Amino acid sequence: MASANRQSNALERALDDITTRIGCHLRPPVGPPRIPVGLAVPDDLRELYRRCGGATLFEDAPYPWRVSGPDELVAASPRLLTPDIAEEIAATDPSDLTNGCFVIADGGTGTSTEPHIVIDLHPARAGLCYLAGWDTYGLVGDMPIVADGIAELLQRLLATNGQQPAPPGPYHGDAYEEHLRR
Image 1: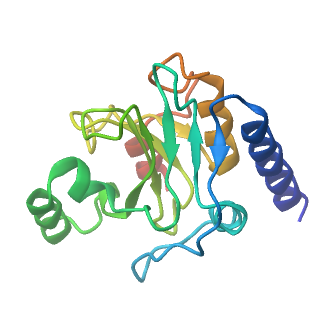
Image 2 (image 1 turned 60 degrees about the horizontal axis):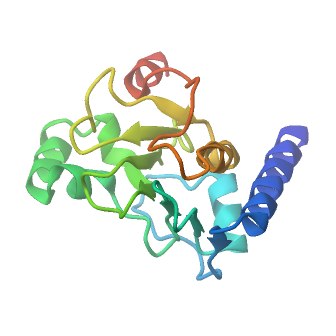
């Protein structure tokens, strides 16, 4: 219970911080996310979407971020790899870590060449957030774990101040290292 309260307090602080920063705002809530059966929505993500429909951070800065609302939470593989490659991976290697990843934040203009943060919704890894690019997504050693939950992710994105293209480290290792440990 104490851990849940700490997470809730950290999320509340991060959301409050967003509302006080110039060029940052929360979007109105639009309901819960719809995700495929077999995946898990972590409590802190559920709470984020109860309180808001995503966020825009540093909209006029060199490196803005857009935190996905529940209606924008899309599977990362079709978006970053193409739908055909995503289908092939899902069919040939259903246990691949990328099959449970969804885009939780887009850097820059949100194009596929901009930095992305993906959130893992596989039940064993639900809530881990990985830094991914179109050229690094799904590559062992090239998907650092930038946050272990939504509050930490928001704090790291806020720490960029819109002046750097990726959240500052240190990170929690690589997505695939974590995948192998669990």
